[in-house]
Amino acid sequence: MSSSGKKLFLATATALIAATMPCAAQTVWPDRTVTFVVPFAAGGISDVLARMTAERLQARLKQNFIVENALGAAGTIAATRVARADPDGYTLFWATVAQVTIAPFTHKISYDPIKDFAPISLVATSPFVITVGESVPAKTLTEFIAHVKSKPGQVSYGSAGAGSLTHLAAALFAKTAGLQMNHVPYKGIAPAFQDLVAGHIAMMSPSPVELKPFLEKGSLKALALTDTKRSKVLPDVPAITEFMKAEPVVTWNGLMAPSKTPAAVVDLLSREIRAAAQDPVFLQRLAVIGVDPVLHTPQDFAKLIAEETERWRTIIHDLGLKVAQ
Image (cartoon, rainbow, N blue to C red; front, side):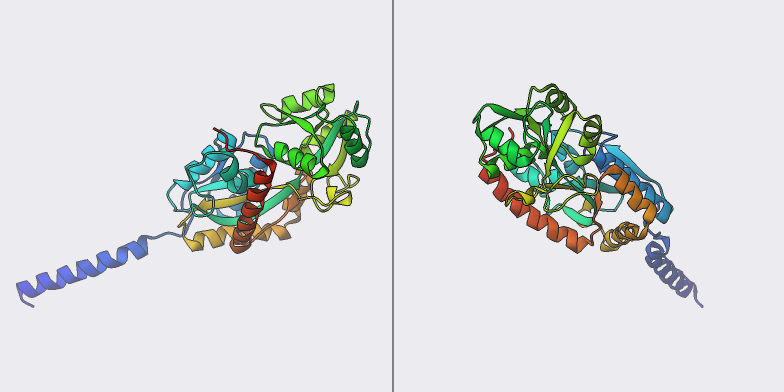
């Protein structure tokens, strides 16, 4: 072979090797730490659920899955961060109904919940509980409605903040029942509970797991769940639809990725999460927390988000709530 022929051969071989190197160098996802960005503080239901799911995925996929809590603006700061992250599967959003289907109508946001995210799987749901203090002269929802109607504009309900789900659940109940009540927003659920127990407000709508310790102490009364069915956590508390025709108010937690994340990554994560439906240990841990398992395919999750977005658009408009400035 001539000198020029050898050079041509080597150049061609080098080019072929270089062309195949990216495929050979690719590794199976995940090959480094995956981060769940959670929109609420450590220790809350969403944080606990995220850590449970991260632990399961870490064990199954043999890679580190960690949780970072990014607080502020009703969780929209966390959502914005993930929406702008690289769509490589290493930064994921632990989403709740608040940031995905409600925030567009209650807050100024810089992300599109549908266009900027790829749904992976829903994990769990939970209703809220129409709850009154011990001093309120009512033992049933019907009695409470009659009590409020006897004092129009004089009875107050609290929430964890304007635009929060505790606010929306209570406001929707009041509107559906035709009640004139005053809303008292608090900076979190804890001070609202304090004033409810003390009798400074008459009603609020916490989640079952938040309420349970107060029920065990006998300091509060649970009148109805904001759902179409009863909960295993509070089996003796009736659903609101047992009293009236009402829209359910249920919060959910699930995993989402930035849009354009590879479909193979989304599908792998979804399969591993949905496999938890056959894991009695995981299901028992959900039961202890007080939530109901709902493990979706990406397609089912996307359908739920689309339907819930339109439902909340109508609800918030009918309630007359405005976007927070």
